[in-house]
Amino acid sequence: MRKYINDKKPEIYAEEIIQALNLEPPIDLEKICEYYDVNVNNEPLKNVEAILIISKGKKNILINESKYIYNERKRFTIAHEIGHLFIPWHDNISGCTGIGNFNSEDNVENEADLFASALLIPKNDIIKDIEGKSVTLSLIEELARKYQVSLGAMTRRILKYTDDNVVALFYFKNGKKIVQASSASFSSSLKSGKIKESAADKMITGKMYKSKVLQEHTYNTWFSDSKEGYMIVEESLYQSNFDRVFTLIRKYTFTDNNESILDF
Image (tube, rainbow, N blue to C red):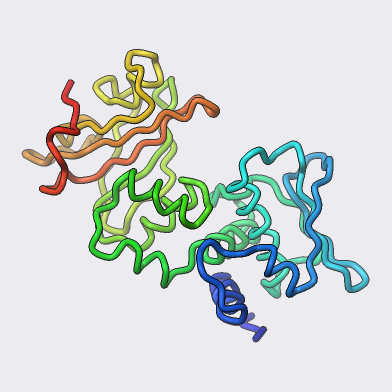
């Protein structure tokens, strides 16, 4: 592996691993660990989700066995710890929390998240997979299955490279909204508080008994900066395990099938 210390672009190291081992999605993390002699074990860790330990030439990734029920989440965590191993300015011992949040105040953790995203969802592959396609919840779900990653990880990666005007967020019962990612062209301001007309609000408050809904709105249903005549589409997925709704909001296009849109 070449050293890119002056560049400080974590994605470079992920791309070199992919090229060196000729990897294709879904990325084989076992092959990477075997090739670079990295041991991965589940342990009852306290206060951390995972830890990378390099000592006396041995490389070990320890995963908190109580934290990871989902395979996609575990894959991202292992990729994150591999990032700590290959990014030269990271420490040899790194205990991690908030993996995959991309909003840590710790730049080192954010860099490992960027590495993991680039490793599991290679840039060239995802650009090819979204070329000429509108960003929809179905597309995100389809590609998340293909790459064996979470919806959140796939959403961030797609929105990084799409030309569509779209934002993805988590919606909670009290009306709190946490933006997960937005495309480069997105510049709208979300309304504060509960969006009572939204499918997300109806789902989280039990007024709508569907796990997945596509709904058409006027622009200022969700956004505070008025744009007359601008229609948007909300696609919401209720995530019962987290008691939240994953919501994708995008500009309405001619490709949207009116028969699949619910009006309230």
